[in-house]
Amino acid sequence: MTDAAERYVSVGRILKPHGVRGEVKVEPLTDDPERFKRLDRVFCLKPNGERVPLHVEGARSAGPETVLVKFREYQAPEPANLLRNCLIQIPRSEAPALPEGKVYYADVIGMTARHADSAETIGTITAIVTAGNELFEIKTPGGEELLVPWVDEFVTRIDKSAREVWIRPVPGLLEP
Picture 1 (cartoon, rainbow, N blue to C red):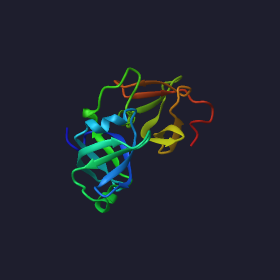
Picture 2 (cartoon, rainbow, N blue to C red):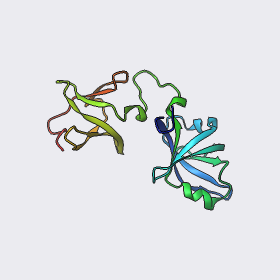
Picture 3 (cartoon, rainbow, N blue to C red):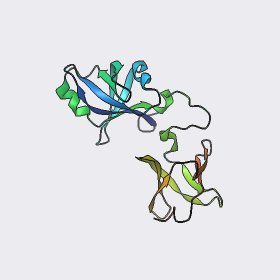
Picture 4 (cartoon, helix red, strand yellow):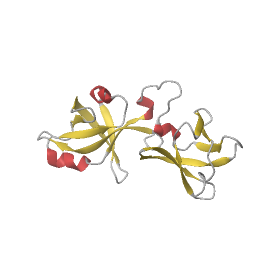
């Protein structure tokens, strides 16, 4: 699969440089912060959309919600500051399998959202937005954007093989 066609899974967000050796503080976006110790090559998605490969030289815990990561390509804090707000990603093909009923955000993007009662197409999921809880950003066939909470009350089923998310909305939820 080419780089352009490969899906990526975000596993962390770089907060800022730490110390004098080029380490960076990372907010884990994974249930397993220890995974940073097992990574070799990752990709840094910059805010401008550029994705660059990086090699993990080391990682260590810096508290319950922070990991310090050292990349071979950065040996001082000033250059490492350029990584601020980058997402650390791995190719989806290298991500570990998830338990039954769980999905990676990267797998949901592009899925068709359907109404659970009528099977009518609501639109296409274009992003996952975090605002206290996760929200599906859905683009309707008419071009409107909707936000639907990713909670069991509304999301009745995710069919990975059919690439569909079934939603049972309350009245008014699907109003742009």
